[in-house]
Amino acid sequence: MSLLKSIPKVDKLASNEAFKDLSNSLIISIIKNKIEELRSDILDKKIDLIDENELISKVLTEYENIIKPSLQKVINATGVIVHTNLGRSLIDKNVFEKARDIATSYNNLEYDLEKGKRGERYSHISKVFCELLGCEDVLIVNNNASAVFLILNTFAKGKEVAVSRGELVEIGGSFRVPDVMSNSGAILKEIGTTNKTHLRDYENAINENTSMLMKVHKSNYSIEGFSQEVSFKEIIEVAQKNEVIDYYDMGSGHLIDLPYGLKESEPSVLEYMKQKPSLLSFSGDKLLGSVQAGIIVGKKKYIEQLKKNQLLRMLRVDKLTLAILEENVKSILLKDFDSIPTLKMLFKTVEELTINAQKVEEKISSFCTCNLLETKTVIGGGTTPNKKIPTIALSIEFKNYKPNKIEKIFRQNNIIGRIENEKFLLDFRTILEDDINILIEKIGQIINE
Ligand SMILES: *Cc1c(COP(=O)(O)O)cnc(C)c1O
Image 1 (tube, protein in one colour):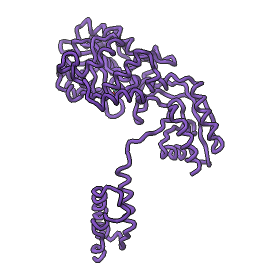
Image 2 (cartoon, helix red, strand yellow; image 1 turned 90 degrees about the horizontal axis):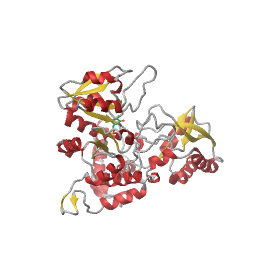
Image 3 (cartoon, helix red, strand yellow; image 1 turned 60 degrees about the vertical axis):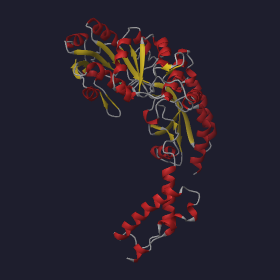
Protein backbone atom coordinates (compact mmCIF):
# COMPACT_ATOMS: atom_id res chain seq x y z
CA MET A 1 0.00 0.00 0.00
CA SER A 2 2.88 2.34 -0.71
CA LEU A 3 0.65 4.18 -3.16
CA LEU A 4 -1.58 5.37 -0.29
CA LYS A 5 1.49 6.65 1.50
CA SER A 6 2.56 8.65 -1.52
CA ILE A 7 -0.66 10.68 -1.63
CA PRO A 8 0.46 14.32 -1.39
CA LYS A 9 -0.17 16.22 1.86
CA VAL A 10 -2.98 18.78 1.64
CA ASP A 11 -0.97 21.77 2.86
CA LYS A 12 1.98 21.00 0.68
CA LEU A 13 -0.17 20.65 -2.42
CA ALA A 14 -2.09 23.83 -1.55
CA SER A 15 1.15 25.80 -1.50
CA ASN A 16 1.82 24.90 -5.13
CA GLU A 17 2.62 27.83 -7.41
CA ALA A 18 -0.47 27.03 -9.56
CA PHE A 19 -2.78 28.12 -6.75
CA LYS A 20 -0.96 31.24 -5.67
CA ASP A 21 -3.57 33.85 -6.67
CA LEU A 22 -6.57 31.79 -5.66
CA SER A 23 -8.62 31.56 -2.47
CA ASN A 24 -6.58 29.35 -0.14
CA SER A 25 -9.54 28.11 1.89
CA LEU A 26 -11.48 27.07 -1.23
CA ILE A 27 -8.39 25.37 -2.72
CA ILE A 28 -7.83 23.40 0.50
CA SER A 29 -11.43 22.28 0.57
CA ILE A 30 -11.29 21.09 -3.06
CA ILE A 31 -7.93 19.35 -2.50
CA LYS A 32 -9.37 17.47 0.47
CA ASN A 33 -12.22 16.17 -1.68
CA LYS A 34 -9.92 15.22 -4.54
CA ILE A 35 -7.58 13.40 -2.17
CA GLU A 36 -10.52 11.51 -0.70
CA GLU A 37 -11.49 10.41 -4.25
CA LEU A 38 -7.90 9.43 -4.93
CA ARG A 39 -7.76 7.34 -1.78
CA SER A 40 -10.88 5.40 -2.64
CA ASP A 41 -9.69 4.91 -6.24
CA ILE A 42 -6.47 3.42 -4.91
CA LEU A 43 -8.35 1.11 -2.54
CA ASP A 44 -10.62 0.03 -5.39
CA LYS A 45 -7.52 -0.58 -7.49
CA LYS A 46 -8.75 1.78 -10.16
CA ILE A 47 -5.38 3.50 -10.43
CA ASP A 48 -1.80 2.39 -9.92
CA LEU A 49 -0.01 5.71 -10.17
CA ILE A 50 -0.43 9.17 -8.70
CA ASP A 51 0.07 11.97 -11.19
CA GLU A 52 0.46 15.16 -9.20
CA ASN A 53 0.12 17.43 -12.22
CA GLU A 54 -3.13 15.80 -13.15
CA LEU A 55 -4.35 16.29 -9.60
CA ILE A 56 -3.44 19.98 -9.72
CA SER A 57 -5.25 20.43 -12.99
CA LYS A 58 -8.35 18.69 -11.62
CA VAL A 59 -8.35 21.03 -8.63
CA LEU A 60 -8.06 24.05 -10.92
CA THR A 61 -10.94 22.87 -13.10
CA GLU A 62 -13.14 22.30 -10.07
CA TYR A 63 -12.23 25.77 -8.75
CA GLU A 64 -13.26 27.35 -12.05
CA ASN A 65 -16.52 25.38 -12.06
CA ILE A 66 -17.43 26.60 -8.60
CA ILE A 67 -16.68 30.28 -9.05
CA LYS A 68 -17.84 30.72 -12.63
CA PRO A 69 -21.27 32.43 -12.64
CA SER A 70 -23.94 29.83 -13.12
CA LEU A 71 -26.63 32.33 -14.05
CA GLN A 72 -25.49 33.74 -17.39
CA LYS A 73 -26.67 36.06 -20.08
CA VAL A 74 -28.00 34.40 -23.23
CA ILE A 75 -29.25 35.67 -26.57
CA ASN A 76 -32.85 34.58 -27.04
CA ALA A 77 -33.16 33.76 -30.73
CA THR A 78 -36.11 31.41 -30.23
CA GLY A 79 -38.65 34.12 -31.11
CA VAL A 80 -40.67 33.28 -27.99
CA ILE A 81 -41.05 36.64 -26.25
CA VAL A 82 -42.19 35.54 -22.79
CA HIS A 83 -39.84 32.55 -22.48
CA THR A 84 -40.20 31.04 -19.01
CA ASN A 85 -36.94 29.06 -19.27
CA LEU A 86 -35.01 32.16 -20.35
CA GLY A 87 -36.17 34.49 -17.59
CA ARG A 88 -39.58 35.63 -18.93
CA SER A 89 -39.73 39.42 -19.14
CA LEU A 90 -36.68 41.67 -19.28
CA ILE A 91 -36.20 44.87 -17.37
CA ASP A 92 -35.15 48.00 -19.21
CA LYS A 93 -31.73 49.30 -18.15
CA ASN A 94 -32.98 52.79 -17.21
CA VAL A 95 -35.83 51.38 -15.18
CA PHE A 96 -33.35 49.13 -13.43
CA GLU A 97 -31.16 52.16 -12.64
CA LYS A 98 -34.07 53.88 -10.89
CA ALA A 99 -34.77 50.74 -8.88
CA ARG A 100 -31.08 50.45 -8.09
CA ASP A 101 -31.16 53.84 -6.40
CA ILE A 102 -33.92 52.62 -4.11
CA ALA A 103 -32.34 49.26 -3.37
CA THR A 104 -28.87 50.63 -2.67
CA SER A 105 -30.02 53.26 -0.21
CA TYR A 106 -32.48 53.47 2.66
CA ASN A 107 -35.98 54.27 1.48
CA ASN A 108 -39.57 54.78 2.62
CA LEU A 109 -40.66 51.21 1.88
CA GLU A 110 -42.76 51.05 5.05
CA TYR A 111 -42.48 54.61 6.24
CA ASP A 112 -44.92 57.47 5.83
CA LEU A 113 -42.73 60.49 5.13
CA GLU A 114 -45.57 62.92 5.83
CA LYS A 115 -46.68 61.55 9.17
CA GLY A 116 -43.29 60.28 10.30
CA LYS A 117 -44.89 56.95 11.13
CA ARG A 118 -44.95 53.39 9.90
CA GLY A 119 -46.33 53.28 6.38
CA GLU A 120 -47.63 50.56 4.11
CA ARG A 121 -45.45 48.64 1.67
CA TYR A 122 -48.21 48.28 -0.93
CA SER A 123 -49.26 51.93 -0.88
CA HIS A 124 -46.49 52.97 -3.29
CA ILE A 125 -48.03 51.05 -6.10
CA SER A 126 -51.73 51.46 -5.45
CA LYS A 127 -52.14 55.01 -6.75
CA VAL A 128 -50.64 54.33 -10.17
CA PHE A 129 -52.38 50.96 -10.54
CA CYS A 130 -55.76 52.28 -9.50
CA GLU A 131 -55.40 55.25 -11.85
CA LEU A 132 -54.60 52.92 -14.73
CA LEU A 133 -57.14 50.21 -13.96
CA GLY A 134 -59.90 52.02 -12.18
CA CYS A 135 -59.76 49.45 -9.39
CA GLU A 136 -60.46 50.15 -5.73
CA ASP A 137 -57.24 48.60 -4.47
CA VAL A 138 -54.29 46.40 -5.39
CA LEU A 139 -52.04 43.93 -3.60
CA ILE A 140 -48.70 42.57 -4.78
CA VAL A 141 -47.39 39.11 -3.83
CA ASN A 142 -44.46 36.95 -4.87
CA ASN A 143 -46.00 35.56 -8.07
CA ASN A 144 -49.38 34.75 -9.51
CA ALA A 145 -49.30 31.21 -8.12
CA SER A 146 -49.13 32.69 -4.63
CA ALA A 147 -51.90 35.15 -5.51
CA VAL A 148 -54.19 32.23 -6.39
CA PHE A 149 -53.25 30.42 -3.19
CA LEU A 150 -53.72 33.47 -0.97
CA ILE A 151 -57.14 34.24 -2.45
CA LEU A 152 -58.42 30.67 -2.12
CA ASN A 153 -57.04 30.32 1.38
CA THR A 154 -58.53 33.61 2.54
CA PHE A 155 -62.04 33.24 1.17
CA ALA A 156 -62.64 29.58 0.46
CA LYS A 157 -61.06 27.52 3.24
CA GLY A 158 -63.60 24.77 3.91
CA LYS A 159 -65.92 26.30 1.34
CA GLU A 160 -66.80 25.49 -2.25
CA VAL A 161 -65.28 27.12 -5.32
CA ALA A 162 -66.98 26.45 -8.65
CA VAL A 163 -64.60 26.00 -11.60
CA SER A 164 -65.40 24.80 -15.12
CA ARG A 165 -64.05 21.32 -16.01
CA GLY A 166 -62.59 22.92 -19.13
CA GLU A 167 -60.40 25.18 -16.97
CA LEU A 168 -58.78 22.76 -14.53
CA VAL A 169 -55.39 23.58 -15.99
CA GLU A 170 -51.91 22.41 -15.32
CA ILE A 171 -49.31 24.99 -16.25
CA GLY A 172 -45.57 24.24 -16.21
CA GLY A 173 -43.70 23.82 -12.95
CA SER A 174 -46.32 21.70 -11.18
CA PHE A 175 -49.07 24.27 -10.77
CA ARG A 176 -52.34 22.34 -11.10
CA VAL A 177 -55.57 24.06 -10.22
CA PRO A 178 -57.14 21.09 -8.33
CA ASP A 179 -53.96 20.59 -6.26
CA VAL A 180 -53.50 24.27 -5.46
CA MET A 181 -57.12 24.34 -4.43
CA SER A 182 -56.91 21.40 -2.05
CA ASN A 183 -53.64 22.69 -0.55
CA SER A 184 -55.28 26.02 0.14
CA GLY A 185 -58.13 24.33 1.98
CA ALA A 186 -60.77 25.16 -0.63
CA ILE A 187 -63.23 22.58 -1.90
CA LEU A 188 -63.27 22.26 -5.66
CA LYS A 189 -66.72 22.07 -7.20
CA GLU A 190 -66.25 20.98 -10.80
CA ILE A 191 -68.94 22.20 -13.12
CA GLY A 192 -69.83 21.69 -16.79
CA THR A 193 -67.92 19.29 -19.01
CA THR A 194 -64.48 19.38 -20.61
CA ASN A 195 -65.74 21.05 -23.77
CA LYS A 196 -68.87 22.88 -22.67
CA THR A 197 -69.80 24.90 -19.63
CA HIS A 198 -72.97 26.99 -19.53
CA LEU A 199 -73.96 29.94 -17.39
CA ARG A 200 -76.63 27.77 -15.74
CA ASP A 201 -73.86 25.42 -14.55
CA TYR A 202 -72.51 28.27 -12.44
CA GLU A 203 -75.99 29.21 -11.24
CA ASN A 204 -76.83 25.62 -10.29
CA ALA A 205 -73.53 25.19 -8.44
CA ILE A 206 -74.28 27.90 -5.91
CA ASN A 207 -75.40 26.72 -2.46
CA GLU A 208 -75.00 28.00 1.11
CA ASN A 209 -71.40 26.71 1.28
CA THR A 210 -70.26 28.39 -1.95
CA SER A 211 -67.71 31.14 -1.50
CA MET A 212 -66.59 31.79 -5.02
CA LEU A 213 -67.08 31.38 -8.77
CA MET A 214 -63.61 31.15 -10.24
CA LYS A 215 -62.47 31.40 -13.83
CA VAL A 216 -59.01 30.22 -14.89
CA HIS A 217 -57.28 31.30 -18.09
CA LYS A 218 -56.54 28.31 -20.37
CA SER A 219 -52.96 29.43 -20.63
CA ASN A 220 -51.31 26.69 -22.63
CA TYR A 221 -54.08 25.00 -24.61
CA SER A 222 -57.32 25.78 -26.36
CA ILE A 223 -60.53 23.86 -26.81
CA GLU A 224 -61.74 23.99 -30.40
CA GLY A 225 -64.82 22.60 -32.14
CA PHE A 226 -68.03 21.86 -30.24
CA SER A 227 -67.18 23.96 -27.22
CA GLN A 228 -68.46 26.74 -25.06
CA GLU A 229 -67.17 28.64 -22.10
CA VAL A 230 -68.75 31.36 -19.99
CA SER A 231 -67.13 34.79 -20.11
CA PHE A 232 -65.85 36.36 -16.91
CA LYS A 233 -68.31 39.18 -17.49
CA GLU A 234 -71.26 36.78 -17.18
CA ILE A 235 -69.70 35.05 -14.19
CA ILE A 236 -69.36 38.42 -12.44
CA GLU A 237 -73.07 39.08 -12.95
CA VAL A 238 -74.15 35.71 -11.56
CA ALA A 239 -71.75 35.94 -8.62
CA GLN A 240 -72.80 39.43 -7.62
CA LYS A 241 -76.49 38.57 -7.90
CA ASN A 242 -75.94 35.62 -5.58
CA GLU A 243 -73.58 37.45 -3.23
CA VAL A 244 -70.59 35.19 -3.75
CA ILE A 245 -67.11 36.28 -4.87
CA ASP A 246 -66.13 36.26 -8.54
CA TYR A 247 -62.46 35.71 -9.25
CA TYR A 248 -60.46 35.37 -12.46
CA ASP A 249 -56.97 33.85 -12.43
CA MET A 250 -56.00 35.56 -15.65
CA GLY A 251 -52.47 34.10 -15.80
CA SER A 252 -50.73 36.53 -18.10
CA GLY A 253 -52.43 39.86 -17.57
CA HIS A 254 -51.78 42.62 -20.09
CA LEU A 255 -52.69 46.27 -19.69
CA ILE A 256 -52.62 47.13 -23.40
CA ASP A 257 -54.61 46.06 -26.45
CA LEU A 258 -52.80 43.16 -28.11
CA PRO A 259 -51.82 43.53 -31.78
CA TYR A 260 -52.14 40.88 -34.56
CA GLY A 261 -55.90 40.56 -34.17
CA LEU A 262 -55.54 39.14 -30.65
CA LYS A 263 -57.39 41.99 -28.98
CA GLU A 264 -60.84 40.35 -29.16
CA SER A 265 -59.86 36.84 -28.10
CA GLU A 266 -57.55 38.08 -25.32
CA PRO A 267 -59.07 41.19 -23.75
CA SER A 268 -56.83 43.27 -21.49
CA VAL A 269 -57.16 43.59 -17.71
CA LEU A 270 -58.66 47.03 -18.36
CA GLU A 271 -61.58 45.48 -20.24
CA TYR A 272 -62.38 43.18 -17.33
CA MET A 273 -62.02 45.98 -14.79
CA LYS A 274 -64.89 47.85 -16.45
CA GLN A 275 -67.14 45.12 -15.04
CA LYS A 276 -65.96 45.83 -11.46
CA PRO A 277 -64.96 42.27 -10.56
CA SER A 278 -64.50 41.20 -6.93
CA LEU A 279 -60.97 39.93 -7.59
CA LEU A 280 -58.65 39.35 -10.52
CA SER A 281 -55.01 38.28 -10.45
CA PHE A 282 -52.19 38.04 -12.99
CA SER A 283 -48.42 37.67 -13.29
CA GLY A 284 -46.00 40.58 -13.19
CA ASP A 285 -43.50 39.02 -15.58
CA LYS A 286 -45.65 37.64 -18.36
CA LEU A 287 -47.24 40.10 -20.81
CA LEU A 288 -47.28 42.90 -18.29
CA GLY A 289 -43.54 42.90 -18.97
CA SER A 290 -42.24 43.58 -15.47
CA VAL A 291 -40.70 41.63 -12.59
CA GLN A 292 -41.81 38.36 -11.04
CA ALA A 293 -44.87 39.24 -8.98
CA GLY A 294 -48.49 38.35 -8.51
CA ILE A 295 -50.83 41.28 -8.91
CA ILE A 296 -54.22 41.16 -7.26
CA VAL A 297 -56.75 43.86 -8.13
CA GLY A 298 -60.37 44.31 -7.18
CA LYS A 299 -62.73 45.52 -4.49
CA LYS A 300 -61.23 47.18 -1.45
CA LYS A 301 -63.19 45.10 1.06
CA TYR A 302 -61.68 41.88 -0.35
CA ILE A 303 -58.15 43.25 -0.64
CA GLU A 304 -58.42 44.37 3.01
CA GLN A 305 -59.26 40.79 3.99
CA LEU A 306 -56.31 39.44 2.01
CA LYS A 307 -54.01 41.86 3.84
CA LYS A 308 -55.13 40.39 7.15
CA ASN A 309 -54.17 36.81 6.21
CA GLN A 310 -50.96 35.73 7.98
CA LEU A 311 -49.90 34.05 4.75
CA LEU A 312 -49.27 37.44 3.16
CA ARG A 313 -46.20 37.84 5.37
CA MET A 314 -44.73 34.78 3.66
CA LEU A 315 -45.62 35.91 0.16
CA ARG A 316 -44.62 39.54 0.43
CA VAL A 317 -42.36 41.22 -2.10
CA ASP A 318 -39.13 43.12 -1.75
CA LYS A 319 -38.42 46.83 -2.41
CA LEU A 320 -36.68 45.90 -5.66
CA THR A 321 -39.87 44.30 -6.98
CA LEU A 322 -42.02 47.24 -5.95
CA ALA A 323 -39.57 49.79 -7.34
CA ILE A 324 -39.41 48.14 -10.77
CA LEU A 325 -43.13 47.45 -10.89
CA GLU A 326 -43.94 51.05 -10.01
CA GLU A 327 -41.76 52.32 -12.87
CA ASN A 328 -43.18 49.84 -15.37
CA VAL A 329 -46.80 50.52 -14.53
CA LYS A 330 -46.13 54.25 -14.73
CA SER A 331 -44.66 53.71 -18.22
CA ILE A 332 -47.82 51.89 -19.29
CA LEU A 333 -49.96 54.69 -17.86
CA LEU A 334 -47.90 57.20 -19.87
CA LYS A 335 -47.96 54.91 -22.94
CA ASP A 336 -44.17 54.78 -23.01
CA PHE A 337 -43.96 51.18 -24.25
CA ASP A 338 -40.35 51.55 -25.33
CA SER A 339 -39.20 51.17 -21.73
CA ILE A 340 -40.87 47.77 -21.46
CA PRO A 341 -38.78 45.32 -23.52
CA THR A 342 -41.55 42.69 -23.73
CA LEU A 343 -43.96 45.18 -25.30
CA LYS A 344 -41.27 46.70 -27.49
CA MET A 345 -40.54 43.26 -28.96
CA LEU A 346 -44.23 42.48 -29.34
CA PHE A 347 -44.88 45.66 -31.34
CA LYS A 348 -41.80 45.48 -33.61
CA THR A 349 -42.88 45.49 -37.24
CA VAL A 350 -41.74 42.90 -39.76
CA GLU A 351 -39.88 45.73 -41.53
CA GLU A 352 -37.87 46.59 -38.41
CA LEU A 353 -37.07 42.91 -37.85
CA THR A 354 -35.98 42.58 -41.48
CA ILE A 355 -33.50 45.45 -41.11
CA ASN A 356 -31.87 43.72 -38.12
CA ALA A 357 -31.80 40.35 -39.87
CA GLN A 358 -30.20 41.92 -42.95
CA LYS A 359 -27.52 43.55 -40.79
CA VAL A 360 -26.52 40.13 -39.51
CA GLU A 361 -26.94 38.41 -42.89
CA GLU A 362 -24.61 40.89 -44.56
CA LYS A 363 -21.85 40.24 -42.03
CA ILE A 364 -22.05 36.46 -41.88
CA SER A 365 -23.11 35.35 -45.35
CA SER A 366 -19.50 34.99 -46.45
CA PHE A 367 -18.85 32.34 -43.76
CA CYS A 368 -22.05 30.30 -43.97
CA THR A 369 -25.22 29.74 -45.91
CA CYS A 370 -27.94 31.89 -44.48
CA ASN A 371 -31.39 32.76 -45.72
CA LEU A 372 -33.79 35.37 -44.55
CA LEU A 373 -37.34 34.09 -44.18
CA GLU A 374 -40.74 35.27 -43.06
CA THR A 375 -42.24 32.88 -40.57
CA LYS A 376 -44.35 32.77 -37.41
CA THR A 377 -43.64 32.61 -33.70
CA VAL A 378 -45.62 32.64 -30.45
CA ILE A 379 -45.75 35.17 -27.63
CA GLY A 380 -45.25 32.39 -25.04
CA GLY A 381 -45.56 32.32 -21.25
CA GLY A 382 -49.10 30.98 -21.37
CA THR A 383 -50.38 34.17 -22.95
CA THR A 384 -52.19 33.36 -26.19
CA PRO A 385 -52.32 29.57 -26.60
CA ASN A 386 -52.11 28.33 -30.20
CA LYS A 387 -51.96 31.85 -31.63
CA LYS A 388 -49.10 32.76 -33.98
CA ILE A 389 -47.58 36.14 -34.71
CA PRO A 390 -45.44 37.13 -37.73
CA THR A 391 -41.67 37.24 -37.48
CA ILE A 392 -38.41 37.26 -39.45
CA ALA A 393 -35.67 34.67 -39.07
CA LEU A 394 -32.31 33.75 -40.57
CA SER A 395 -31.70 30.09 -41.28
CA ILE A 396 -28.09 29.09 -40.73
CA GLU A 397 -26.29 26.21 -42.43
CA PHE A 398 -22.62 25.29 -42.51
CA LYS A 399 -20.24 22.37 -43.05
CA ASN A 400 -23.12 19.96 -43.84
CA TYR A 401 -23.89 19.91 -40.12
CA LYS A 402 -27.33 18.68 -39.11
CA PRO A 403 -29.61 21.39 -37.63
CA ASN A 404 -29.49 19.89 -34.14
CA LYS A 405 -25.69 19.96 -34.25
CA ILE A 406 -25.75 23.65 -35.22
CA GLU A 407 -28.34 24.30 -32.51
CA LYS A 408 -26.04 22.70 -29.95
CA ILE A 409 -22.94 24.65 -31.03
CA PHE A 410 -24.86 27.93 -30.86
CA ARG A 411 -26.33 26.95 -27.48
CA GLN A 412 -22.83 26.28 -26.12
CA ASN A 413 -22.11 29.89 -27.05
CA ASN A 414 -25.22 31.10 -25.19
CA ILE A 415 -27.22 31.71 -28.36
CA ILE A 416 -30.52 29.87 -28.11
CA GLY A 417 -32.22 29.42 -31.48
CA ARG A 418 -34.88 27.01 -32.72
CA ILE A 419 -35.29 24.32 -35.35
CA GLU A 420 -38.13 24.64 -37.84
CA ASN A 421 -38.65 22.53 -40.98
CA GLU A 422 -35.25 20.87 -40.55
CA LYS A 423 -33.46 24.23 -40.42
CA PHE A 424 -31.72 26.00 -37.56
CA LEU A 425 -33.22 29.48 -37.17
CA LEU A 426 -32.29 32.68 -35.42
CA ASP A 427 -35.59 34.50 -34.85
CA PHE A 428 -35.25 38.28 -34.74
CA ARG A 429 -38.48 38.92 -32.82
CA THR A 430 -36.53 38.39 -29.56
CA ILE A 431 -32.98 39.42 -30.45
CA LEU A 432 -32.24 42.68 -28.65
CA GLU A 433 -30.95 45.67 -30.58
CA ASP A 434 -27.98 45.83 -28.21
CA ASP A 435 -27.10 42.20 -28.94
CA ILE A 436 -26.92 42.40 -32.74
CA ASN A 437 -23.20 43.18 -32.82
CA ILE A 438 -22.42 40.60 -30.15
CA LEU A 439 -24.36 38.06 -32.21
CA ILE A 440 -22.38 38.85 -35.37
CA GLU A 441 -19.10 38.56 -33.47
CA LYS A 442 -20.08 35.27 -31.85
CA ILE A 443 -21.23 33.72 -35.12
CA GLY A 444 -17.86 34.69 -36.65
CA GLN A 445 -16.08 32.90 -33.78
CA ILE A 446 -18.33 29.83 -33.96
CA ILE A 447 -17.74 29.36 -37.66
CA ASN A 448 -14.00 29.93 -37.41
CA GLU A 449 -13.62 27.23 -34.77
C1 LIG B 1 -48.73 31.52 -15.36
C2 LIG B 1 -49.98 31.22 -14.65
C3 LIG B 1 -50.01 31.08 -13.26
C4 LIG B 1 -48.78 31.22 -12.44
O1 LIG B 1 -48.24 32.48 -12.49
P1 LIG B 1 -46.75 32.75 -11.94
O2 LIG B 1 -46.62 34.22 -11.98
O3 LIG B 1 -45.84 32.03 -12.86
O4 LIG B 1 -46.68 32.20 -10.56
C5 LIG B 1 -51.21 30.82 -12.65
N1 LIG B 1 -52.33 30.66 -13.38
C6 LIG B 1 -52.34 30.76 -14.72
C7 LIG B 1 -53.63 30.58 -15.45
C8 LIG B 1 -51.17 31.05 -15.41
O5 LIG B 1 -51.16 31.15 -16.74
